Length: 307
Image (tube, rainbow, N blue to C red; front, side, top):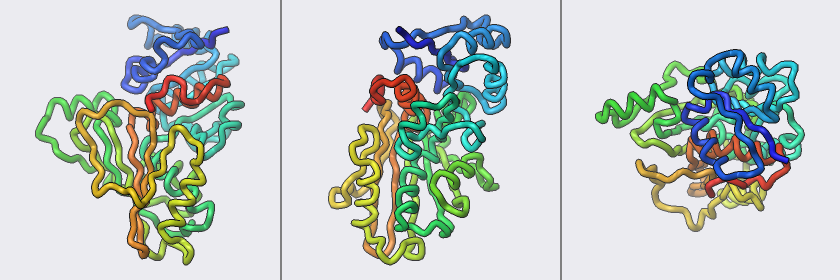
């Protein structure tokens, strides 16, 4: 028996990459609206009610509208927008943090944001084990490929080849902050410094840990051991041994798609830098949606992923 899947917003960057990962998978039947119908409310409502699982690849307001359109159906929903990440009644779709069982039984799953995926993966296990102080005011320096900003930012970077770096979110209050604080288990939202470079995909999330952020027992080896234990056995999250750390980390303009998440611990014994490297369109978006879809359907979570 196949599972009927409807991608609402299938023409966008995230939706297109989800479709690519579903190609050739006989477990699923994809419900597709042609261009003339994909924005019609009546057609979307029919598709949402006909699907077993709907994946929303929409702006926040449109995602909320889709959830309303789906009311009265038994359709389970994966929302790739930021509309429901801290909302009541929704399960946060980060299986390595939240737990696979919770996602497997959930009717409403909200995909994590791309930047929060790196931050939470690095910080949550360390805070939970008391190695990083939950009340310390953390900072996050992060850089992403321009595809994370959707079609408008893609058009901007591809039209203006002179853009070398774009800093944004300068007024603070970024929409990712509530989920970063909640799921990392920290008392204060971090000071978040996001930026964009002229690479289509890829992301580096860097969390500096000065000495006051660390407890007395939090040596570099302890930080690594904690992360290694937290993700032991994961086929998606890879924790790199500090003894083999590279001297530099690079984002390449021609990087291939990846659904993996690589975590690093750098330090000199007195302070540390936690670094996550991921594809903002992979584990940061489409790959995470497919991983959650697999779990919700009782399948191998890595099916269709690019690892």
